[in-house]
Image (cartoon, rainbow, N blue to C red; front, side, top):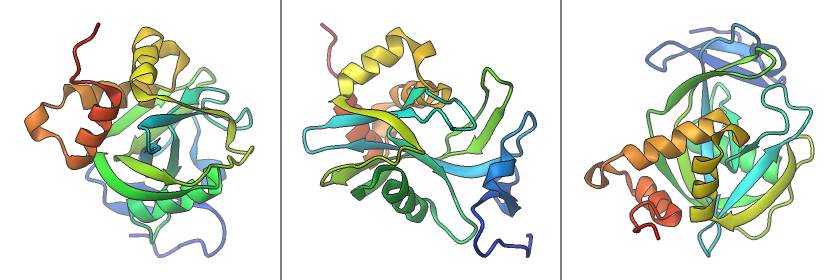
Length: 201
């Protein structure tokens, strides 16, 4: 593993195909047309009424600017676990405290290319969590946000997948494809909120 760990600069942790940490790259430099595989997470944030927080990425974002997506995502730092990184990013991006963090898709991974040719290439476990109190999004990260019934969000993604981030589209499809008996506790929480097991009217 790399011994060069940035002390202050924000960074991304590169990894091999098995998810073993290899080294670090400054976050501002990692996303190119040949982005290396790196570690991240993705989170779906629910409130007490099972409404889902959906966010629109800030227009200054390097990848998929202005695109609607799940509640928030983030990159791990060298010494962080996914839950630690999730708590840090919830505060930084949403000004939010979270609780009841549970894994939904522990082995999710994707590669996608945006309209500008920039590549996202991540091992990115998916989580669900509950919000504690209000959110106050950071405008450098989030340009708009809305709390919406989770089943309506799912219906919108299914009807207009081109309007949402490719990872959100993939994640919701993957969650729906997991047999009920094989779901993690987190997957059950999210599928219940999304109404995946309810008959469609």
